[in-house]
Length: 171
Image (cartoon, rainbow, N blue to C red):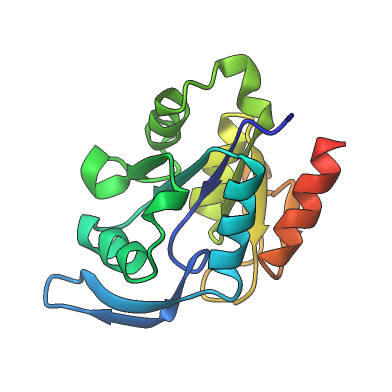
């Protein structure tokens, strides 16, 4: 297996931000998943990939959403901004996940980061040499790269396309 790990953002990557119900502290207490999110995670876990949640979010948000859908079991690592005190694109949030999974620097090029935000997810992944995949299924965030480091290696409109990209990368 060439791919060493797959990192997912949360908002508008696994969880549909338009469905969020938040409490007074802006913690998401309920939300729905993006189409095929659970199916894709299930498939990736069955294949045997290490999976990390690398997200700028509140602690309660990811616990509530993943708990609702019984999805904690898919993740080997949680790199959460509120827990770590840094937000993407800061390299430290990605390095926390890489180190937690025991991935050496020579293998960073075999780690995928999938997210919906060019400035945070894609730039952060590209700075470390990860494989950046932009999940562009809506236009809630800017959709034109403003710098070289915001240009994704791949762009997908559906999470199911991720499986095809991984299959090609593994060949």
